[in-house]
Amino acid sequence: MSATPPPFTFVAGCGRSGTTVLRTVLDAHPDLAVAHEGRFVAALGMRRARYERPEGFALDRLVADLLADRAVRTNLELDEGDLRAALAPPVPDFATATRRVFARYAARRGKARYGDKFPGYVLRMDLLAGLFPEARFVHIVRDGRDVALSSAAIEGQESDPVALACNWVGRVRAGREAGARLGPARYHEVRYEALVTAPEATVAPLCTFLDLTYEPAMLAFADRPGAVPAKVETNPRHARLAEPLSPGARSWRTHMGHDDLAAFEAAAGDLLDVLGYERAVPHPSPAARARAAWGRIRWQARRAKTRSVRSQRVHGT
Image (cartoon, rainbow, N blue to C red; front, side, top):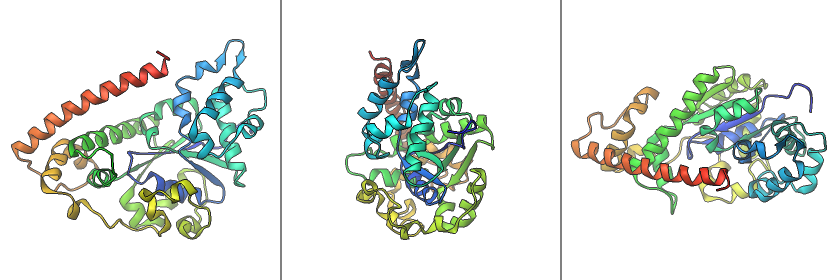
């Protein structure tokens, strides 16, 4: 690793907002390798005191934790030999170790720059920004109604429009608020709708933000062998990655029921307005507002319970 590390690219956003599509576009750049959900960076970063010990960096402990993480083995495709080679002592801290792991991932693909895409990073941008002063964050935002429609179509996933609205609002706001703190030198927002309708006009300034030269081949990722990891390629949720960029066939305008649409907008209308997305039901009925209010209470209770469980896991209790 050089004394001044290259910009560490993080791609984040609410799930079903196009993070995988954007990751695939960026990964098609000849100089940049963006992992599909290495995801460990924030989780282990919150526990970095486990490795950064007064007696020295606990390298064996970090390697064991990385190998126990399925994402490292399957998404980064790194085994113990790779990790040991990347983390040859001395290792001063967790941030340096993480850079080396991703540099190894990139080098195996013949690239000098590295990054990671994981939707959940949208809630951990402040943490990541502190760990990696060179980090740059790309936040992709999509109309929440299409996010909800896409999420509800996945078997076994949340389908209540108010819960989906609350999740979208929480994640988009968290990303934008963190971005405001970071400033334009470290935070760049991409609209999904712009990416799929005007890809060159969207990707070219993104490359400038990341200190990369725009390459037209980035938009021809569907024609590049190996552009999509096998695990992602076989997932029906990402079937459109085999096709050129284009708007999806499904849209909330034609596929979302009126009652669900009214409830979603009653819960998320303020953010839709801020983002410039036109409402279909600008004046929701009392029934829609009541459904949104009760749904928000239930969602907040569930979120509090989830946070409590996660906190116990992080602190080993």
